[in-house]
Length: 270
Image (cartoon, rainbow, N blue to C red):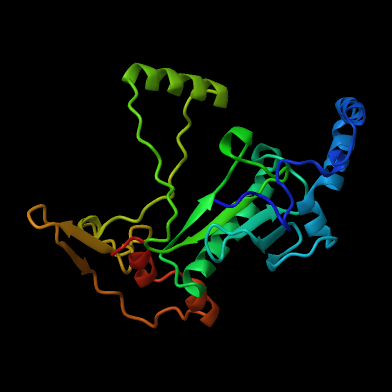
């Protein structure tokens, strides 16, 4: 995969240290060590090639930009259309971003991933985060890689499957859960509408009581039941008839931006 770099700069070489004597490097390192967090942030900005791209001092191939986020083409792509999505503010690693910033950044990632599937007729995309040196991060500016994929493109992101004992897994679970706070917290799911069978039963019960109002128990209009035949793995799908009435009009923008079932089938190899 391409390194986190732009315009040919060596990713692990600090501009401020180029052409410096060992004594000057040691002096600079001592100065950095004594900097406040604010001073260190400003110093990093001055040395960061991606901050220069954000400010316009260094040219790039921009494909998206808003108040907080920039997306550019990687000039040494792993595949054609390899995009780097980065916050305009200088952050070295992902945990430094606020929840709002990371949420917005990944909404941009989602939009660009969708665009890559359509514009480049890609069979899929890899969304890659190299968070920390041990994870392969070389740039000092946090970013997300979006890499369009096609069959037999020569890239291999297959992860090894290592064996691990139940005891080791449990020890890891406990350690991570304790670090995150008070154990594992369940995220509440959005309430689901009852299925058609439950709806009809409830409607019959209310009819027996002389009640006709069944608000709050109406089924999903286009609910789908999927039956899987274990013998031949054929999937049979049956849709309930939609209720009468004019369907809600969709805007042309919604039709254009939404991933269709054909798109999903293509990505999943269906």
